[in-house]
Length: 171
Image (cartoon, rainbow, N blue to C red; front, side):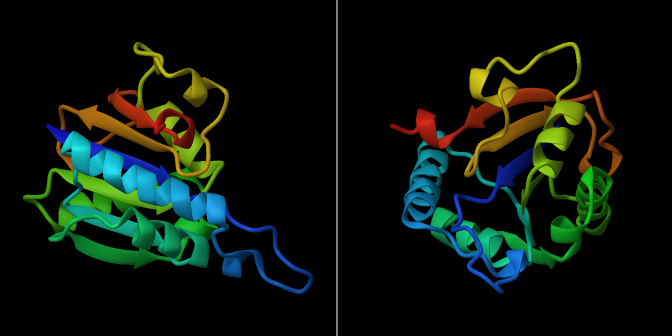
């Protein structure tokens, strides 16, 4: 059994003139949401063994404020900023190949890739029960998807949505 955590970065400021999208930082709402998500994860006893984080500033800051308890393996991936859902799926499989004993991985990335991947992985048979998920994948949203197969063998349509956290449900 393995688990995939898909975390969309928290709410970021709009880019100021001349600022690259890559360099956007979290706003106050985003920082608060990331901190609350971190507390929620601790309460739920959910913790990934591997975290793969987009190199974009807002993703890095989200991970920082979620404040996961160590130990976990941290990897940075520019592909989670520039790539599509396939790059996200490949990151999960590669993590499974490189760390054979690991049974859980978290991706910290961006939409629309997060939403596309979550919908693809969670399978058609079990539609996500969470209404927020159907209307989009909110900033600081986290889908936890469970699989019977090891990480390296995860395929679309084979997962079950185990939990979904969004800033609106943290209160």
